[in-house]
Image (cartoon, rainbow, N blue to C red; front, side, top):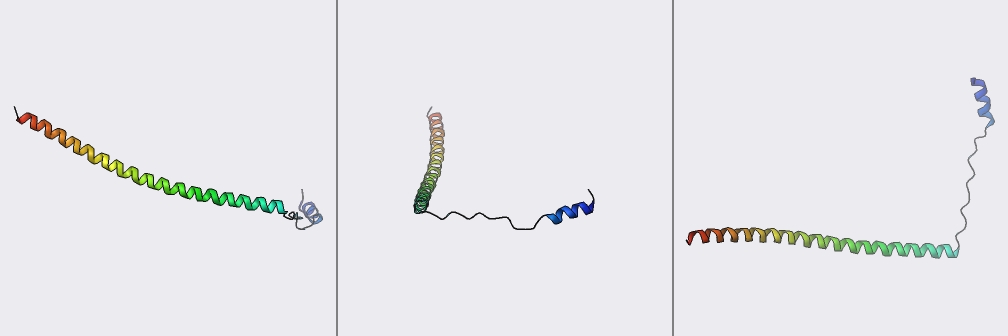
Length: 91
C-alpha cells in the first residue's frame, strides 16, 4: 500500500465523536431498589465492623491464655524438678 492510497483512505473517514447513549431516566422503583441496596450494604458493613471488633477481642484473649499456659507449664516443670530433687535427698 502506498502512502498516497493510505492518505486517501484516511481522508474519507470522518473524525466525529462516537454517539453516546443516553442513560434511561431513573424510575421510582429503581430509586427505591437502589436505596434498599445501599441500606443493606451499610447494614452489612456495620455487621463486619462488629465482627472485626469481636475477632480482635478473641485474639487478645487467646494471646493472654497462651501466655498463662506457658507460665503454668514452667511452674509445673519447676514443681516436677523440685519433687524429684526432694525425693532424691530423703533416701
